[in-house]
Amino acid sequence: MDSTLGTEAIQYASRGWHVFPLVPRDKAPLTDHGFYDASTDPATIREWWRRWPRANIGIRTGVLSRLVVIDADGEEALAKLRDLSTRLGQLPRGPRVKTARGWHGYFSIDSPIASRKIEGVIDIKSDGGYVVAPPSVHPSGIVYTWQPPPNDAPPPFLPETWLQYLSNSCYRESAESVCYTESAENALFNTGDNTRENAGDSGGGFSLRESNGLDAVIEAAIRETLPTGPGQRHRAIFELVRRLKGIPGIANADAMDLLPIIREWHRLSLPVIRTKGFEETLADFLDGWEKVRFRHGESPIEIALARARKAPPPPEANMFDDPRLRLLVALCRELQRLDPGGTFFLSCRLAAKCVGADHMTASRWLKTLARLEILELVQPGDRGERLAAQYRWRPRDTVIPF
Image (cartoon, rainbow, N blue to C red; front, side):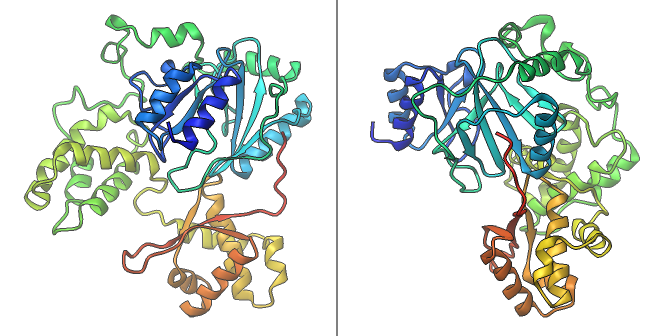
């Protein structure tokens, strides 16, 4: 085995952390049963990374690895975590991982804790879950890194106040959420009356699987987004997603319920897209369904610009004399606030239009903000591909509460 990732996986296994391979530059498992296949056996791990030398590393969390990871993506999650630390007591310092969008804090446990989300934005990775471990590569190209790395001792244990909070809060969840335990994990492999088809709908009452047709609003969304020429398929699917997200009762619908809509759109698009099969259309639609944040008729840049003009400017803007540059700084902050844990896209031409400057000036200003580390340039733009640059706002007051 000649793989840095494989070598690191064996090192994790030597700590008692159960590891398994993930798709390169992705979080999806490569093995048939995902984290259920996780192992500490060196021979098994060597064989995995001999077969997939660039595979990312997944660590199964929970009592099996005696490990719980607190996953805080973005400033909103970190702020919530600081609030919890005030109420429950400060979390002990230990190994941390810088991820593409935030931080992972590693802690030891001796008793089961369910993997779940707390405070709406913080992920607890424990029983029933796993994390991506360094030096894995995020889909964006960012490498997961230890800051600081684990030492010879196990990670610090969670304080009793935190254990009690995490254990009790599981039972306060609504009926729409699931608290995973070891027994619940095993139940996932059961069939029969517990399968999805027999479980009833959970998407808020909306279902097309048993309907006799598409209503007028949905049919209009389909027909108004059909491609009219080559090269339009991806954009047309994206627009279909945005339109469906704006129809009451569908925005939170289950993917299985949307299959008739996708099939009808694909059938009507075939004269234009020709050789593209339904499965490819389905994959692109589901990818968009997970990522689209703004419905048809909503413009994130207009929302962010209105907020930037109304709200007090961020402290980072005060170092500049030109009011247009100060507005650009405020615009970037508001774009980030629309997706606190993610990134935003902004071209120099669009930035120039928003703040009333020429595009060359806006381009220099964006480069200046990146050099001053007010912005992080995640991905440069590409004029040939008509792709805007991708940025992340870098607040100066970020405090990591573990």
